[in-house]
Image 1 (cartoon, chains in turn orange, brown):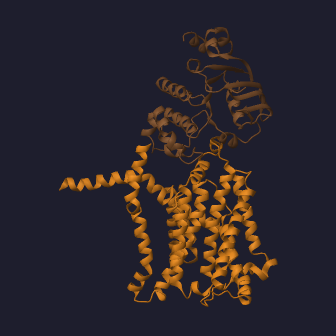
Image 2: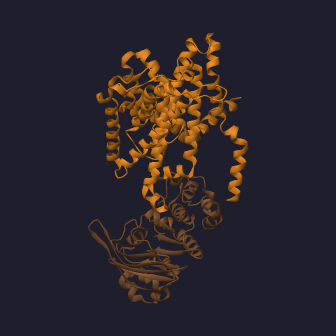
Image 3: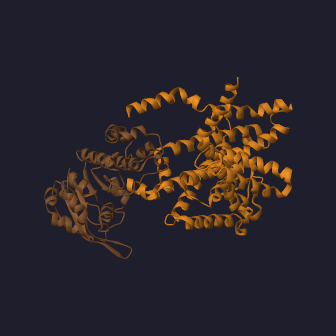
Length: 372
Length: 243
């Protein structure tokens, strides 16, 4: 074992950069992207074309976190939940309700300033909003896992679908029209000026990028921890987990709560980005989107859902331009083809075939070197 | 009694409506190998599952190191220090050998402490450390299943049919492994292979029709061809005589 360990350490230390070469290059490209766009188009990074493209990427970053949160449940823990939009919507509505109804009320009555005279009221209220989103997400996660602890398989899927739909109905209930705007949703949410996505697009771009990177690292840490190993073991065989001495119910709840936190935060980001919260964010379609993104990219990986979210962004944006309102039809065909030919998603299939592809490539290049 | 690791007294276990165990009593002494013998369907596996709480007994007492554990949840019982190696090579087949072992850690560093011992018992596992469980052969999977139970500090190991479906040479290796680990922990073994059981175990219990019908020292049973014949069938009886 000592030998095995030292091997690992030796591999890891200089590898920190080497192992993550691709990820770091992509990250640097994403950081430079707005400036590159501004160079190419000749427009400032906060206007025109660069602004549009930053918007595309912001949407992608947020949906990537949402898709990763779904994969933690489905891909890692093997929990196929159909109520995931409830987490996303809960985050979005918590943020929007707080900023629309409560934050202005408080800031109109109290002012908190730093000794230097700087007004930090909105900043503090925004931090409170994030904390509220966290708390609501944790409660939602506990509620979902508590309500479904005794059911398995199809019945579990049905229960999560039912709870998800219940929240959807709640979000468009006319009883709360004064608060939530019912069918219309909340629009024109007074997002703090310093992160307003229309005025400070570039700043919001970096905020969303930072959000995705942090959530990726957080979820990576979770999945590689001993707790994450138990998640995977539950996916494999719950009974054997019990034999080893872990309570599967506890770990399922943990998975639910972690996933709900990630989904809730991405929902909150989404409501900031759109400056709105609408019932469509809690609908089953939003859950299905998470499922599609995860399956497209690769189940049981974290990079997969990110890729899936990116593809989804491209599809939804450009297919509408190319095919008009019928774009989901074309997308559906592509989705079927992808599932048939890449059954484990892009990342999953790549990992499975990596060896074979490498061997094929060397055979291919050998041919040429032999001819020479 | 101080030297008892496990005391099972008159447990009654039902699976659905079926009365499977109708009074099994066992005393498993510390630091020895005790084997449960009996025909197919006699209730040996159910006895192990009842001890762990996977099929909780409706009546009776199960004491582990003097503490009653009947009625407790299986994961709590396991965490008290009982390792269970189920039949049919119950590993996590999509996880690697390393992950299969790591997951059994109850404290951080359990595996690092035990790794040398485990690789000494099962040298194959070291070579296969990074491979996924479903790439392993049947015998290797069985070894992994036993190894997994050795990772945490278990005082008692319940091992169900370790020789099932193994080639003779692997049975020999498995026997050696179980014998050498019995110096560290107590073992309660279920084994159909009477020759293996008779060479390994110090004590035996015979379970028939859900009842524990006879027990004693293995050395006595080997010479008692009539009992072996009656409860374990002729074929194994003949083997037992040849010992």
